[in-house]
Length: 74
Image 1 (tube, rainbow, N blue to C red):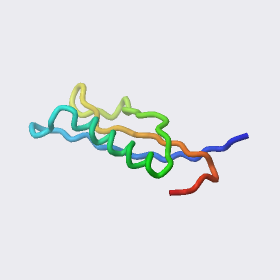
Image 2: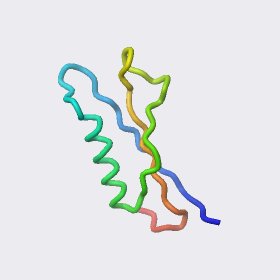
Image 3: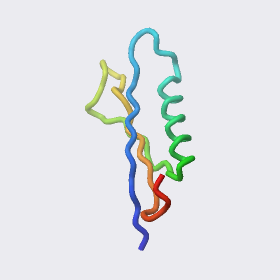
């Protein structure tokens, strides 16, 4: 039976008038590409429900990665 290890990366959302559309997506994308280069596989991106900035905006995102246990730790 395979075993897996998980890595959690928090991507904080930037607020304010200087925030550009797509900025949070680019931050998540960069984290995914960086971790993939180290052998991690994207498992899920979570926006914690009770962690909101204002009425609709998220405070941040949790990006969850997975790797088979015993695989090269990087």
